[in-house]
Length: 613
Image (cartoon, rainbow, N blue to C red; front, side, top):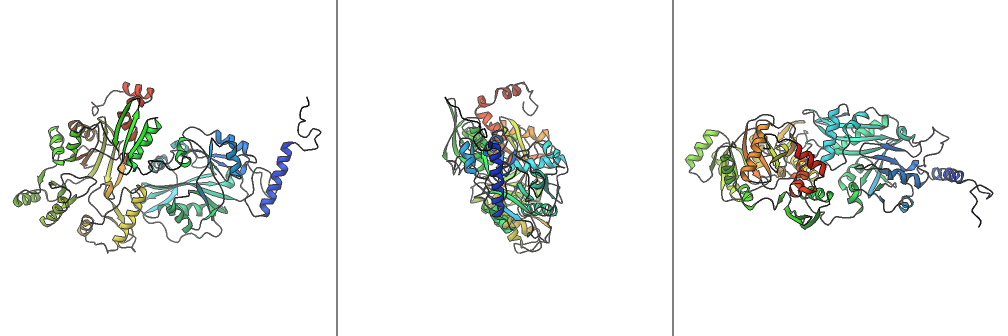
């Protein structure tokens, strides 16, 4: 039996390594002749030694530069080294079909496009950002704020220490947009300098993780961050800036093309993992679920709970595990009784139940009371709130009414939603929503009315329309600012109308109510909420006997004990409170055996606080 001779031994052929280098060098020459991006990994006679098999850790995963790999085998091995809960991305993959053929069960071609901005022809904008400024990441608080925005955008979180450790890195840079008045972080972008990462002969750079807070009031934050990174890399002497964007993200693609980016034929490959699942399994059968149902369905599937969607448009689905099936409509489930639901549905009943439990409530009168009583009520309180006894999402609610003519008009509007209309004293302060699940606080957030910022050019009506479009895009169509009688009255009360032009930087609150569906914004205060407010919310939930609820309080501040109960919501939007674990606690309630054993044990050993007792 004759064995094969090793390559290069008497065969007249050079060893495989030498053949690979010769072929690689030849390919390098041919690609340069055609003006294409050269492969990396060999000695470039015109520059420094290039880094082979480069993978740059960015916290959420590694950026693997495919052009630094001469063969698919080491690139595949690098991708197979992806850590749990991370998303590695192989970019500039030459011959992606060959790489996929090596592991079709593990890899997939990312459905994204690559765009490139030529920095030699790029022209900076002469208009400076208004209401915010751009800077490098400088503090640990910046890292926490970036992760908060990542969570709100459904992106992979990064260990905060990683951001801080990389703040002075040569190949990675982080920029944030900061509100000039509040100091809040409004958006972030990450840049990678390819020349410093792997001695890229093309001296390129790339943009990653562009994310803007869904509740940012100022327009143009994302565009400003892109421009800032482009100008930063241009000053470093880089030749171009690349980015990857999902093929169907029409809004982002329009922005990039407006800035001068052009599509280039480079491909991205990722591993099949739970984070990337929706990118390689095709459209989901429940793709039409709203964000409030989606967050619950995703958590259930993560735990191996079977999901059956019966009505995606209305948010109805069933969860099944171990012979137990529970029907849900978003966060409303079989575990909420019809009685508890009816108590929440009727604001007069809600008020009576929680007041009997010792929860502080505002003074109230029925709108059909004699006129003399209504006038006396208005005189006693100065400002009142009109709202339907039944209703949701802020419809029919008018706040801060000061005369009988306004009250009569608001009562007529509310009466179209419910026959019974209530008039309450107007309690000033902030609108606080507390999510109580299984009679424990899970999340707390201040809800603030929509505010626009003038630019000295556009009338108020156009600014509201633009803000409304941004809110719709950021919330999956769940939030917008209606231009109705309530909006017009709020603007008129401060001396403006829809055609007025605000001076640049002038802020204007355009509605009194802070409901998300009418353009309000949500700001997490879970870590600082006062214990008295927590006790009031839990007491209200117990009085109603409802296992999942959103308790609304009007407070002086979330850190102070003063409050007035406003209402209880039997179907609170859990998606509004990320990154707090609202969906996790909801599934814990429905399927306690799905909780990992160590977590169950730790929970059973944790003593109850006063608010949990």
